[in-house]
Amino acid sequence: MQDLKKLWKVFNQKFRDTGLIKGAFSAPGRVNLIGEHTDYNEGFVLPMAIEKKIIMLGQLRNDRLVQVFDLGYKAEVKFSLDSLSPSKKESWANYLMGVANEIQKAGYPLQGVNLIFISNIPKGAGLSSSAALEVVTALTLAKLNLLEIKPVEMAHLCRRAENDFVGVDCGIMDQYVSRLGQKGNALLIDCRTNNYKLISFEDSNYQIVICNSKIQRGLVGSEYNIRRRECKRATDFFTHRLGSKIRALRDVTIEEFKRYEEYLPETIARRARHVISENYRVQTGVQALKEGNFSAFGQLMIESHQSLKNDYQVSCTELDLLVDLALEQEGVLGARMTGAGFGGCTVNLLRREYVDVFKKTIKRGYKKITGIIPDVYVTHPAEGAKVIELRQGSKVGNNG
Ligand code: GLA
Image 1 (cartoon, rainbow, N blue to C red):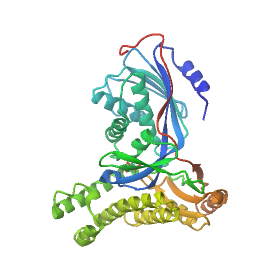
Image 2: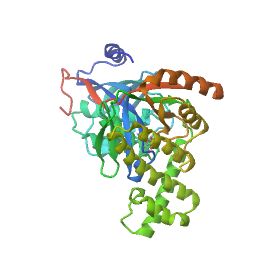
Image 3: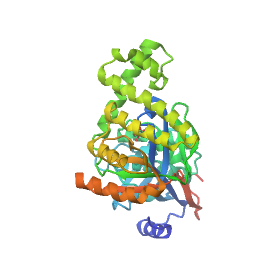
Image 4: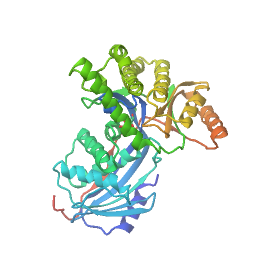
């Protein structure tokens, strides 16, 4: 990643100094350890922020224009804060426009800004590069406009931006952990109450390793929204049978599911079984981690993958292959697909001393069968979005 001095140099070449407040901000990608497709069912998830991130530099303008330069893709876009609507042509700009739109809709006044950003989170790999872009944009806009937006509220604004401007009906997990992640910890998020608990993940004997299948998540938007609707059907069924105490699949116990499963259409039963059992795996997994029982946690990761593959049906051949290759290796405690699915990455839990061998072997094995060399990232739980620096301007903006 480029250093800040160089980034400011690019910024100054791109934009005239407005004399107003400026700053540098960052937001990380994430990997989910366990709890997949549970967030929009008001359940539990256990993600951690990763070291890959987006850095954004910005300066306030004295008008209503937003000018953005994506340094990685050398792409530029301009839009006015007065006419925000999703763009078909510049779809990447929807993440930024959506966030500006949601901030204004929530009643916060915004002025225009000049922005540049650079990312080392692989795109379309299931590591939440889009959530990171939303979160870093929200933080930049908030800080430059001197707005106090609480972290959880910011995560929700960003999720709504993705729902309305990008058209993916995602849950809260990605934006939440990108905003609130903490170094050395995974976050156990209760997606109903929006509270979280820190789960320490700094055991020196174990390591999280991510494998990127390099299969882009083509179907993700459409299939994701279909899964959401299937979950809604299952919820409606259980509310009808068990009463209003069932507000989401989170409220259905495994026993209740077993009692009624035969009355559900097969596909809907599979979806419900995954969500209900996955919530249970998150709870059990957290307990295992607290007790330092990494083998038990790894086993739950393996079960989670089976459930995502067979019941939720969001895996793909390449992800299954990466998991199978990982589990053949010594020192691997658990492996599963992570994120929405249909491509993207797997997350693996390893004994630290096996990491180097693992990297070599999995690259070789995957390439032999698919012809693709996977990327492998060794990562530690990183901190969430933050202000890197903030410099007051020589002039005062409209809102200052
Ligand atoms: C995507 C969504 C999240 C979550 C995961 C699946 O990453 O953005 O909200 O639903 O898929 O767990």
